[in-house]
Length: 135
Image (cartoon, rainbow, N blue to C red; front, side, top):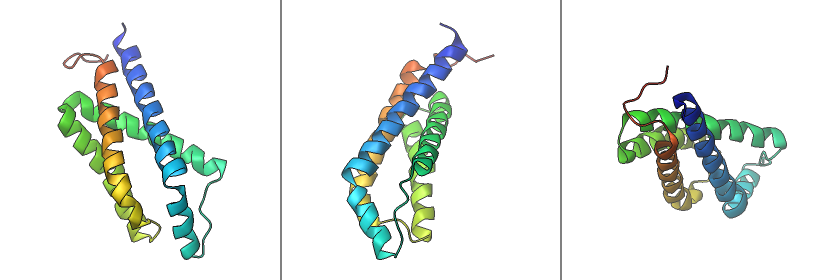
């Protein structure tokens, strides 16, 4: 199979996984936390289709980062580095802006680590064998 094609497939499969995981976590399991927190700030939780589309873009950009890290590092190191870049930095910014309901972190931390680990595994499974360059 063509190396470029395998790379694209790896990013697409990883992106689909990340977006499905994000949707389930934030729209199904944690939605009430988000809505209540925004209401306590006197704000409405942003849930328009445009907001959803931006999060889908975020998910695929995160999948690209996972792909890049998974090509250079072990499964564990790529997972932890991806998680740090994708989630910890985002939560830090959201906390600084006072829009992060910190109560969700009890659930979000383990679920996001699992999401990132599985995403990294998917990326490694479908990407070209390590050591082969894409030209």
